[in-house]
Image 1 (cartoon, rainbow, N blue to C red):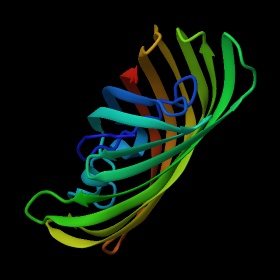
Image 2 (cartoon, one colour):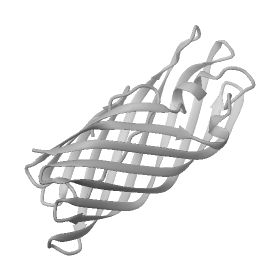
Image 3 (tube, rainbow, N blue to C red):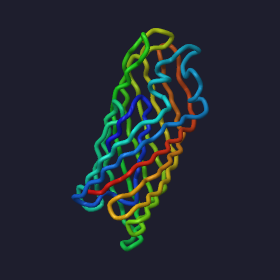
Length: 231
C-alpha cells in the first residue's frame, strides 16, 4: 500500500471484500485521519515543557492516501507504500469460505514498516520508527457490487533517536502496543468502488525521553475513504 503524508501516521487497512485477483492490480486514492483521545491529547507526554516527540511521533492529523496492490497468486497479494517518511510492505492472504455470488472469506495481512521522524523547531533532531501492523477481517463480496468487512487489528512500534524537549535534543527510546477493531464497506460496479473504513484502537506507549519516563495510552480513531480502481 502506498501512503503519502506528514508526521501524523494514519495508515488504513482498506481490506475490502477480498484480496486482489491473480495478475490484476488495484489502485486506491483517498485520505485518512488519526484522531487521538485521552492522555494522548494532553499538551505534553513527557514533561511539563514542549516535547517534540509528542508532536512528531504521536501527532494527530489528516493524510492523503495512495495505495497499490498486485495479485501474486490465487488468494494472495502484495502492497508497497510510503506514509510520509515511513516505508511499508503489505502481504495479504485470504481463506474463502464459499464461492458464489455472495463470497465470504477471512483476510489476513502483515505489514512491517520503517521510517524517519524529523524533529522541528530550533532544537531539530531525528528518530527512526519501525513496527508491524496485523489486521484480520471477515470479508464478504456481494456479487462485485457491495463489499463489507469487520475484524481486529493489532501491532507494535518502536522509536529510537534524538528529539527536542524544552529546547534541547535528548535521546528518545519508546515503544507502542495497540489493538482494536475495524469495519468497512464498499459500493461500486465491476472495477470501480468507493471504500469507507473506521479503525478504533487503544494505544499504549512506554519509554524515555532524556531523563523522563513515558507511560501514556488512549483511544485512537482512524477513519478513511478511498476510490479503488481494479486494473
